[in-house]
Image 1 (tube, rainbow, N blue to C red):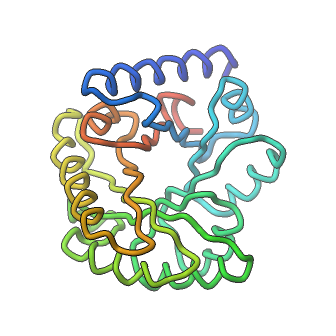
Image 2: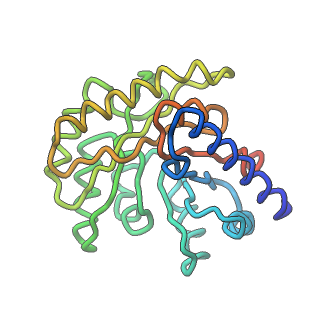
Length: 232
């Protein structure tokens, strides 16, 4: 893919983010774009970096390790956005600035253990399965507060907010209630003022529905296809 194509796609996405944020009275600077780079080759990531992308989201540990090794000197941030197994926790804490998909106390404890080994405070989001789809990971909404309270005791984890993936719809408006519910949950948790728990981030919205997510409070939108084109 030509650099101009990735650059122009990024510019369009940024324009849409700015328009969505402005339309609901938000500062566009409060919405960060995560370029979803799973299965995307390093050359395309390089083009995106040159076009100004500075946060990349990966779903698979091994693939991410290989890519991150290519860009050690670049001032970019790497986020893990896929389902994370506990046995991969030691790699995740070494590679990623933010892990979006913590959905169990077992995983949180393993991440905490591995982060302690390298003297790192690992920033994480709690993945909430608002839609209760059996095909998706995430803690049930009704159990999220209990999980957050348990994780607050872990010294080497810092909960920065919540993440969700709504059901897939062709109509973005149908995803809005799920985003709204995650925002409400975030506000409820923030009001509890739990030690070591911050509700700074809401990771929600992808290529097909990120504008609705922004209008409902998203601070991190995960966009891949609209930047890089169809998956390789």
